[in-house]
Amino acid sequence: MPIEFPCDGCQQKLRVPDNSAGKQAKCPNCARILTIPASQTEEPAPAAPTPSNDPFDFGGPTGDQPAGDNLGAGGFGGGNFGGAAASHQNPYASPAAASQPMGSGGSGALSVQPMDPSGAVSIAWELFKLNFIVLIGAIVTQFALNFGITIVSSVIQMVILQATGDPNTPALPLINGVFGIINQVVQIWIGIGLLLLNLSVARGQKAELSLLFTGGPYLLSYIGLSILFGIGMTIGLILLIVPGIYFALTYWSTFYFLVDRNCGVFEAFRLAGEHAKGNRANAFIMGLISMGLSLLGLLACGVGLIVAAPVVGLMFTICYLQMSGQPVWQPRVAT
Image (cartoon, rainbow, N blue to C red; front, side, top):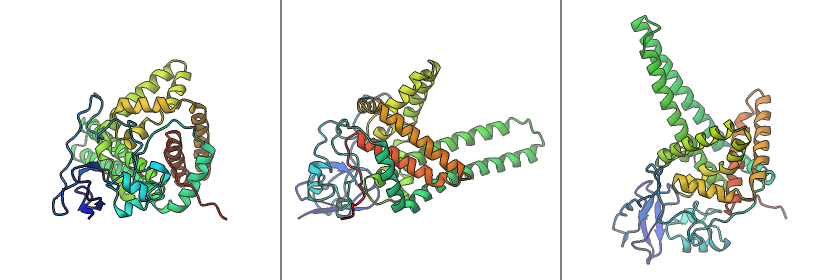
């Protein structure tokens, strides 16, 4: 008899085979690592964190095995995405998650494959039309949070200025700096959530705005990765620009590997470098398409960016899935 139990993170009801007791895997809804109870009456115990040898793995989620190692038994096995094969290989997939077209997340085998930027942008447009409410809502939410933090900072500074009457008081730059840091952290947090949302959409899974607020477990690792990526870009640009472009074309996908594969910072760089082989020219084309779409959005009085930004984000996500050999949602062909 199947074991049913709630995820202790998101409370989604999960169903697994009766021989899965004691095993561990990831909740398809919130990506939380769970231990299956021995019976339906027992509460699942949280999995103990796996020690990491990565000095830049700042407390982000970790898998039970290194990313890319013997992952062929994931939810994408045998080409049956979300059907019986996926349910058999991933005992943590709930009935709802198992019915999703592309499986429950980045647990399938990785392989170096060529990406197709022009095909990716076409798929991205079709996905945008199907999910435009959630995708535009995510962009608006990101802007609203940025605007709200800026307004709060301005109001506090005005109150301090009126109270002290001194425009040179050190409290003003202090408040400005503190809220600037808060805003940056919030934007990174929301950016991770947007990446998770795009991954879900690109795999053909249900798009939920709540994914926008699930980036917390990855925040510190993501910040560490951002710092290293920024240093690499700066050094590359100082060295006559070309090395900086090469660095960007090679390692643009590190952020996707970090979040999607639950790996450390250095492992994300390694995977990105490995999958950049044969894809740097395609990444350059992807960048040109991105700039073209963004320019079109700006020419439409800036309003077009509400459409261009989600489409560009989905295009990058689809290219990541293509280059790593993971399944991507495909539009139905009329017969």
